[in-house]
Structures are given as C-alpha cells and as structure tokens.
Image 1 (cartoon, each protein chain N blue to C red):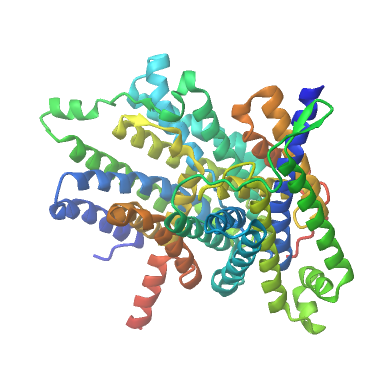
Image 2: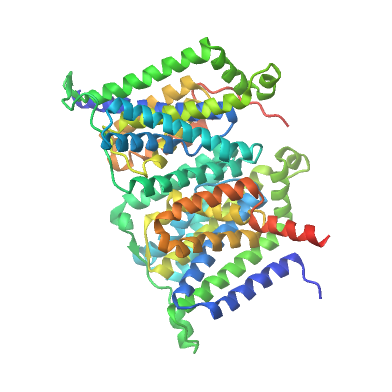
Amino acid sequence: MRLSAKQSTLLVLAILMVISPFFFPSNYYYRVGSLVFMNGLAVVGIVVLTGYAGQISLGHAGFVGIGGYACALMPVQFGVPPALAVVLGAVLSGVTAWVVGRPILRLKGYYLAVASLGFGVLVAMVLSNEGQITGGPDGIQVPDPGVRAWLGAMGLELSTPQFWYAFTGLFLLVGAWLALNLQDSPTGRALRALHGSEVAARTVGVDVARAKLNAFVISAVYASVSGSLLAQQNRLITPDVAGYMHSIELVSMAVLGGAGSVLGAIFGAALLTMLPQVLTVLQDYEHVVLGLVMMLVMIFLPAGLIPSARRLMRGRDE
Amino acid sequence: MSDLLQFLVSGVTVGAVYALVALGFTIIYNASDVVNFAQGEFVMLGGMISVACVAAGLPLPFAALIAILVTAAIGVALNELAIEPARGAPVVSLIIITIGASIFIRGVTQIVFGKGMYRLPSFSGDTPLRLLGAAMLPQSLWVVTGAVAIFVALWLFFTRTLTGRAVLATSNNRLAAQLVGINTKFVMTLSFALSAGIGALAGVLITPITPTSFEVGIALALKGFAAAMLGGMGSPKGALAGGLLLGLMEALTAGYISSHYKDAVAFFVILAVLFAFPRGLYGSTPTERV
C-alpha cells in the first residue's frame, strides 16, 4: 500500500510520539514533550497563515494569551467548566482575529508584521496592567480541566506528566490532520494561490480578502487552543505568554523548520523548545545560539530545515 | 500650566530619541528596502559601550566616540554578514534575520556586560534649569540639541555632497544608480554605518536620563518604528516629526491618562496610522508593480 504525503506525515508524527517515551531518562521529559506539542500546535496555525497564505503575524502570542486567560478567568468569574473554557477561548480568539484581521490584513509585508505585533503587545499590556482581574504580571492560577481524574475513574491511571504528554500529543495530531486536509481543499488552494500572486489569484476568482481572513482566524484558533492547554498544564498563566518574544518564537519555529510544511514546522517547534533545555548548562548563551540559528538558517536554507533536507534527499535519489 | 509644560519638556526629550531611532530605520530602509528590527540594539550598544569605557577611566567624549565607532562597525558587519547574503529573500526571511540579529546582539551584550542597569554621568551636571515653573535637566538640552544637529548635518550631507546624493539616488533606483557609476555596495555600507552610528549617539545622549541594560533595545526599536511609520516610512523629515509627536503623545498620556498605558500609545499610533493614512505624514504615494 502506498501512503499519501498526508498519511505519511501523520504516521511519522504518531510513531515519534509513541516511541520517544522509551528513551526518556526521567519523567521530566514528558513535560518537555508536551511543551513541544503545545508549541507545535500553535506553529501549525502559523503554517496555515504564513506557509500557505504567505501572510506574516508577529502578534500571534496575543491569541495564545487570550486562550490561556480564558481558561483562567472564565471558570472563576462565570463558573464555566474548564473544558468548555477552552472552546469559548477559541471562539473568542476567532472572533477577535476576525475583527482585528479585517483592517490589518489589507496591509502587506512589514506593515502587516508591525500591525500584528502592535496587536500582540497591546493584549500582553492589558493582561499585565488589569491586575484586579488578571492577577497582573505575576500571573493567575488556572483550574484543572479534570480530564485526568475522569480517565482515572475510567480505569486508565496516568501520572500527571504522562497524561499531558498524551493529551497534548492528541491535540497536535488532530491539529496537524486538519491543517493537512486544508492544504488541498478549495480554501487551501485559494490560500496558496494568493501566496503566489494576489493579483493572479483575484483574476481566477479568489476572494483574496476573505481567504486571508480565513487563514488568520484559523491560525488564531490554533494559537488559542495551544495557550489554553499550556495554562491548564502549568495550572498558572502569566502575561509573558502573550508577549513579543513568544510571538517571535512561534514564527521562528515555523520558519526554521519550514513554514510550508506541517512536519517541518513541528520539527522547528521541537528544535526551539528543546534548545533552552539542552542549553541550561550554558544558560547565558541561549540568546546567542537562538539568534545565530535564526540568521544562519534563513541565509543558507531559506525554505527551512525539513524542506531543504527533503530536497537534498530527493536530489540523491535521482 | 506648569504641569503641561513639564510634560511637554519630557515629551520632546524622549521624542528626540525616538526621532533618531526612526531616522536610523529610514536610512537603512531607503538604502536597502529592509526594515531593520535590530535598530534598537544600536541605541542599546551606544549606551552600554560608553558606560563601559567611562568605567574603564576614559573621558566621556572619547567614550562616546568609541561607542559610536564600534556600533557603526557592528552595523556594517550586520549588513555584510547577514543582510547582503540574503538579498532578494522574501520579507518574512528578512524580518527573521534582523530579529535573529537583534537577539544575537542582545545575547552577546548580556554575556560581555552582564544583566545590570547602567547609567552615564550627566554631561553637564544635574541641577535642573527652571523654565516657567517646569524643571528641565541640562541633559534634556543635550539630547534635543544633539538630535537637531544630526538632522541638520544629514540634511546638508544628503543635499550638498556628492556622496549624499549618491545615497539618495541609490534609494530611488538601485539599478539606475549602478548604471550611472555609483558604487551601490559602498552606499549600503555607508548607510548601515550611518544608521548604527546615529543609533549609538542617541544611546549615549539618553543614558544619563534613562538607565540602559541589555534589554532596552526592543522597546526602542518598536517605538522608533512607530515614529517612522507615523512620519511616513522612508522620509527623514517624517522621522523627525513622527518621533517628536510620539514622544509628546506618550508624555501627555502618562501625565493625564495612565502611566501604565504610556507604552501602549506607540502601538495605538501604529494601528491608527496604518488604518487611517497608511503612508504617514510625509510618505510617498504607493505604486505597485505587477
């Protein structure tokens, strides 16, 4: 049986997720793994926006923040069950993206980058300044979604790190599956068409403004769910998750691994999430290495690591 | 009344620094069509290097000179090593490259100079001047005078010298400039050196008022960019107007509305300008080639 590119991507992901724990020296690595998956989820959203549609956003951490704080605030303020808060957070992020995206997405290149950056910074600033609601710069407690307890009652006992590893891994698989399905759907084709040339896309009947807005909203929902999971796993969220640096990290992850490829972007997320863990010994050098990696990859492998590696391998086959 | 005057004084001081950062953006943008997200790091380097030189016992003017020269050299290196090799890359790649450069510069600074906050001594004392009931630090005068001097010098350079006109020609049309014999590679080097040097000078001027640390660059870059946008990307006149306006708006917001949201002003300005008049105060009309 021959697998399609989509099936093989999902299979590779699933196999890596199942095999990796056998090589974990300690429970701590489950946590690192789930961090990779949560960042990966947000980065798959960036693939839809940047990789498919060619639009850049330097403010997506704003949606991560909205998703995260939805899970912290809604259960406490309005008595919403934590699991529902994830969904409501995603809806809120989607609506926000729709409202903000309509004017912003008329812009291109640097202007779009800076406008989205401004949006992200404003979200972070509100979260940090409205202390009486959000807990201010020190962050706020997040209630547990209760899924692990429920699984325990069903007879599936998992330690907390194991549970989050499996739970976030599942979300990432579903997210990757949806993004891969989107790629060759009419919407995905429209996005890739306007990436190539907006004028050409418009000529063949693509509603460019709407297609861009779709991509922006979809990617915002991905970022939001990633933020919700992050908040619920940590049981704490701080305004930093919505900050400028986090937005930059998300885009860097996507672009380093290869923004045009779901697998590549997830690889980029894994690389940049684990880099600080590897460099804990050399903590002071973290920024130097990160900056250097960003520059070198963009100069020498502008398509990103995975697509470049694929091209190299194909070149040898032929 | 004296309150208002006080806010205006501090607004103009900060605004002058934003104007210099915006000018740095403008010079590089004109020469290479790149928006340099590492622009704020030049200001940070100017402050940090001069602080280190003063601590090593050098007199202030020498320290400032060394800081400006070293930062200009770093600006040239940034162009040669990171931006020139990626010429023609998509905007997303260039954004990531310059952001990578800014993170890299920040990381190196943190290793070399540590994480502390540093301050330069004021150039001419800390006795405030009284001005209709508002207090003005002598250093504020230095900042404003420095900014004005830079703008006048650059204006003369761009309009009265052959090299300056070569830079203008290159920013208008690179290929045409090459055809009439302008060394566009030298123009690029010069632009990055100028831009970085101006950034460093802004850093030297402001460090006696606001302490510097390896982290100050990000905020400065964003605000400088907001100022450049407000004035109209690519226009030096716009950089000056945009910087001063942004400084004033920040100071008035901090004074009359909320000091917590002082830093939000820049982003409201960016968004408002982009929606209402995307070319800024002095920007050129857009043309798009298909």
